[in-house]
Length: 280
Ligand SMILES: NC(=O)c1ccc[n+]([C@@H]2O[C@H](COP(=O)([O-])OP(=O)(O)OC[C@H]3O[C@@H](n4cnc5c(N)ncnc54)[C@H](OP(=O)(O)O)[C@@H]3O)[C@@H](O)[C@H]2O)c1
Image 1: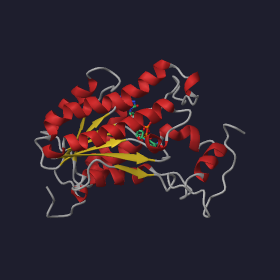
Image 2: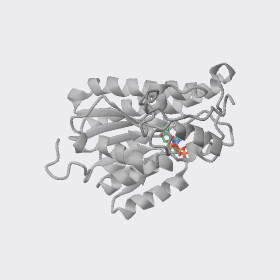
Image 3: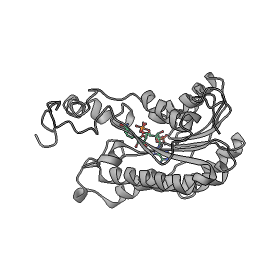
Image 4: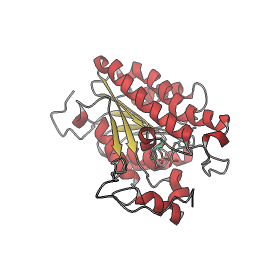
């Protein structure tokens, strides 16, 4: 339903954001709250979720915690049901939680597929893709009761462009886009919009390994026409746009938010690139 008021607001909407403990998810939760939504916040770490909840409450909105490990069977269903029960329904689902293949200390594993482990592939696919399906499957019954239902799936530029040395990540992010586009058609007559958001390189814990290492950061940013990292708030604002009535005729799309990275620049305006740190 198109709002007669400010179409960029979500007053009284009930929203579940996964991966809300930090980074893009935390920024998205705050942006939705600032637009008037009440929030159910999910991630594994309850302590960090409480910090996000305090920011939501600072905006004058309700925040409830629905912690869970989305790699565990049944967790996605429980998170959705607890969120809908606590908020009295669900209008917006932002599935933002996601992982790179990583070592126990959190350092990313950046190796070609032939050198990678099946267990790492399985973990990445379970959080990034399988949880998307499980959350959406369960959320459908709640979203059908809403007059402004919207799902935002946090995919990645990696899902559009590919991701050498992060093949599990790229494949899971591409599959998220296909799932979002498929659901957009399947759920259109249920009144549920479904879109994917595809950020480029964004400054969060996930990318500390890259932005804190000057040669790697410089090389990556040489491929970004805007010449800098995205900040979490810049992605959050796009997530809000996809979720709110301003996007009421927008469904089945993958919105790429990458500072121009995906525009081929091999022509007259080509930007000089330093050699890759992986091949130098
Ligand atoms: N940063 C980028 O450059 C970039 C670019 C494109 C797309 N993205 C996507 O944006 C999303 C957010 O990324 P970010 O950069 O903000 O990463 P981040 O700072 O590492 O945050 C990841 C979030 O996912 C949660 N999470 C991780 N594993 C989980 C699990 N098993 N169960 C439940 N929650 C889990 C984390 O919370 P806990 O650890 O507390 O569970 C955290 O809230 C991801 O889907 C990512 O793929 C990021």
